[in-house]
Amino acid sequence: MKVAEKAVRQSVSLPLRVAKQVGSMAKSRKLSKNRMLLELIENGIDAEKRKQQQFFALAERFRNEQDPEAANRLGDELGRMVFGG
Image (cartoon, rainbow, N blue to C red; front, top):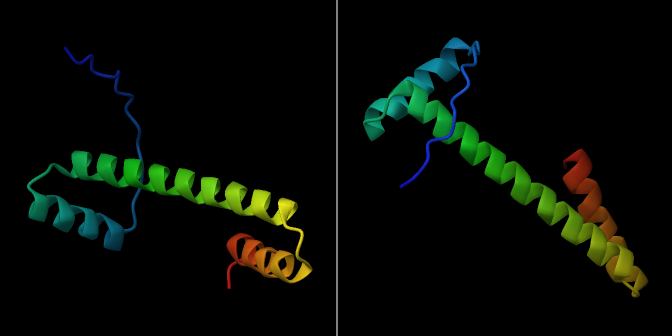
């Protein structure tokens, strides 16, 4: 039997545009707004973890790269990940 996690009540203020998008998404998927927000937050957390893992993998490749040209390309890619662009 699955044990439910304890829920913690949080209050968040959303811009009107975002709140409307959440409501529309929830309605189209036949979910409550609360459940839709939870899924969006969980997906965002997962995406952030993947992004962090990609960054560390790229940093490791950069650190271990022997070819100066390849190291330069990897360094540029790291810079884009950190600073955008």
